[in-house]
Length: 499
Image (cartoon, rainbow, N blue to C red):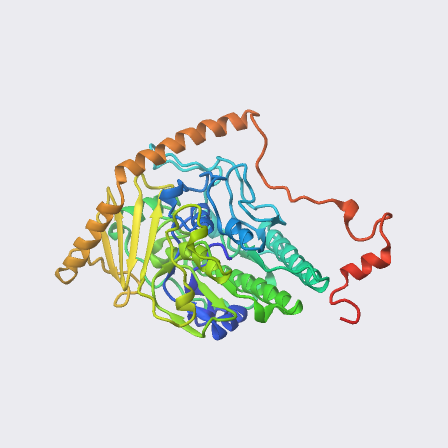
């Protein structure tokens, strides 16, 4: 799992210069989903939907400081019930005291805070949270560095995940193997756009394409304008060189993430499980990267809301799937792979299994739902992608309708076009039936108030930090006095001598 990876910037999805050989190889032998979406274009809400298979409005996963309640079942819980050993290496942005959510093993800490510090305020939606919120300075500082906090983190995630996989090979060699599910979740290519030299050098300035469509500021829709104001894009100008440097660093970090994909695939091959494992590559959301004058995410345009989804392994056909789908669909997909069915679900699941599409079969479902209830809006923003059409609704903004087959850059809002009149009316009626914007707004504000009060109390010394500290007992590692070193050496050797 990547963080903030738009599929548009990968070779597997057709980018002309992106160097992603490992994703390309998976796509070449598996299924590439061409209309996969996140369910909320922000890290924590998207990941909570991914983990639970439920829309964020159902589980109150509104923003990056929303608690992921321990009572919400996840695919990690379900898979353990089906006999799987489960592990998380890397980021999942869990907020709250439960930092495992069903994973039997969690082998790294997270990279972001686990408390309520990042709570927005819908009663003051124009106010920035300057302590943490990124702005155009993030773009201006793009470039090269030997190390950053993000590369430190991702290198640790790779090492820990690979060692965990090797341990599963050791278990199997000792006759103690069981099926497993590993989530290796990396922070790249999330901003800051700062790349290691060896990946930066894969690209040159003259091959970096610039944003394809940037409407004038006065022509931006109201929500885009609020986002631009919030990230300072509407009044802090960027030079062409700054935009190009950020996009080059982003591509470099896409290649860096791709190298991690390759490391995971190699580890599976090393333990003899590659042909017995379904490998899935995805992300929590995308990155506008200057398209439409927007950066980062927090909107439902394609570069922000779409995610890569590549699946390869036993039973998966080679091809492309055009049906709209979303991260919600991965919970029932995992359960079908593991031999379970919907009878094990402890709460309603909003997605459907993608295995029929992965097998190359027809699927009558062709829809993805998105909800955004975080910063820079005082009301929920809703997206429905059905077939080629995408509808975006917010109670205080004019609706938007795009035909992505005819207009992939979303240049023309078709909501008032006579040809699309019936479609627009049907989408509007669907939104009115499925969502009560005023009630959802009040629910969001209520949780914001309670979380701000709790954060103030925690800041004053009430309670313990929730940040995850992976358990480690050095007295049981490697060779110690209570061990026979020859036994320890044989235990760690993989493959075993003579094996």
